[in-house]
Each structure stands twice: as C-alpha cells, then as structure tokens.
Image (cartoon, rainbow, N blue to C red):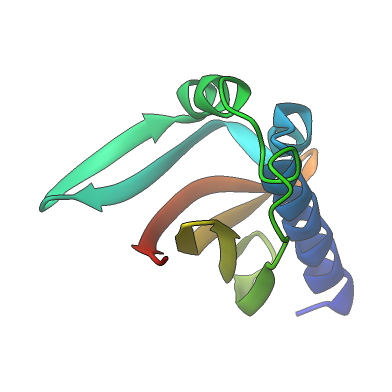
Length: 125
C-alpha cells in the first residue's frame, strides 16, 4: 500500500490522540466520520454509542490534560487491506483507565476517517 496512505492514517491517529488528551471534540470530529459509532462490552452486553453522544460526554468532563495527567498513547498496529480500508490498534490512557482501541478506517472524499471504534480498558491504581 502507498506509504502516503499510512502517513495519512498516522496523522488522523495523532489528531485522535490529541483530541482525547485535550478533550477537544473539534479534533475528534476531524478524525471520526459523522456516522461513526463506539462499541464495547459491559457485563457481556455489547454497548453502542453514536459519535455525537460520545462527544457530549467528552464535553461534559475535563480532559486528561486539564487534570494534569500524563499523556501516553501509541500506535500498536496499522493494517491496510486495500486502497480504501484499514484498521489500527492503539493504546491510550485516561487514568485509572488504560484503553486498547481498534479503529476501523475508510478513505472518504475528505480523506481517511475513523468509522468505528471498538475498545476495552483495564482499571489500574
């Protein structure tokens, strides 16, 4: 796959990391497609959260940066299966929660966008 696609996906991931850390929904909106959803398991039941509902939650709480928390995020893997589809596995944190995110990307007319996020987290002291 073209190196330019990987670089573009990495740039979206950096915007995602910054948006998470800063609690900046404008940055998150530039990374996530408007139709995107977040999914996770809660007590054996799949939870489904549309992007705008997630953004409302982000706006209602101080970001990690505002709380003086250390930023530690990293790209663990990017797999591009074709010119329009990719997935990334990333690690990020909002202590005491330490997340593993699986982010599905599609290349749209506006560039690479996250269309789905599936995540889990560990609680650590």
